[in-house]
Figure (tube, rainbow, N blue to C red):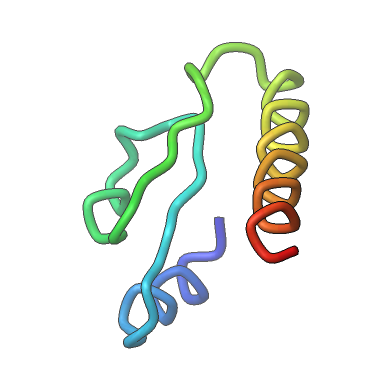
Length: 66
């Protein structure tokens, strides 16, 4: 995680969302929305959870804006 980038996003006026497997991280309370993708179990499963989330989010956006 890039701390400088994260802090500049949090301090901006834009809404911010944290997508993570570790909802107990220190900075998570500073985000407007926290989306937890399961538990912080195997590191290698995290990328597949994230890919599935992005796929579903993209699909939702396309269907909503047809």
